[in-house]
Length: 140
Image (cartoon, rainbow, N blue to C red; front, side, top):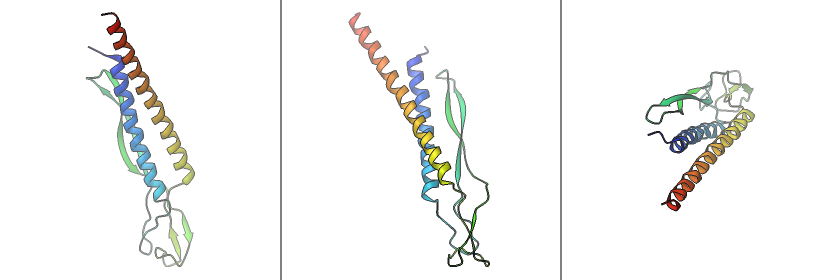
């Protein structure tokens, strides 16, 4: 038997899990915003990206969100002249991470809002389930 309230909780739960992973990836990017390589000419931290996909949960009878892939951003590393840095190449240039602070902050804000929206769905569905049980008790 299909239970739409239970299905909505599971769908929102998949969204909560996905956004939680997204926040973790963005947090890692932010934490490594300034992480250069350790040796001359070495590559710095490479920004990670996360991609979601929709997947049909046959048992549930609904589409849920799943993490499709965690990958690396292939945009070029910005170069800065800093001959005193241990990661500087022979010409004094240092590769810096391809992490854009504004992009990451916007991404984490969007993930936070999506997380809150999914959490609200779970709260509302639980409240409706509780009201349904109360109605069934009072009619018995």
